[in-house]
Amino acid sequence: MASVLAGKRLVVSEERWNGPGASHPPEVISPGGAAPPQAAEVLGVSLPRYYQLEDRGVTGLTLACEARPRGRQADAQTELHALKKENERLKKELARYQSLVRLTQRTVGVPPRPRPRSGKRGRESFLWTVSCDPR
Image (cartoon, rainbow, N blue to C red; front, side, top):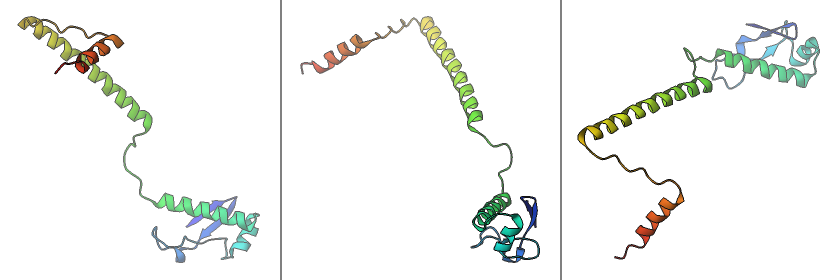
C-alpha cells in the first residue's frame, strides 16, 4: 500500500494493520523502513508536523476503507424540494375537497356555514359568554 505526500513516496507498513477495529493505527514510514524522525527529515517538515500529517493520512485511509451507502443520498435541498412539492399537492387536494363539500351542501340544501369573525372582538365576545355563564 503506498501514498504520496508532499511529493515523496510513503509506505504504510502492513504488519501493524489489524483492520478497522484496530487499537492502534498503521504506522506510516518513509521508504527503507526509517523511523518517524528520519521520515520527517526526508519530507522536510518538523517532527510534530510529521505526526500531524501522519494522523491526517491515517484518518483519510480509514475513512476511505469504510463502507459507503449505495445509491443517491438525500441532501437538505432535495428534501426541501420534495416537501414543498408535497405541500402544494396537499393544498390542491384540500381546495378540491372543500369545493366538493360546498357543492354537496348546495345540492342537499344545507345553508353555508357563516364565516367566522376575524380579529379580537369575536374571540372576546366568545370568552365573555363562556365566562359569564350564570349556572
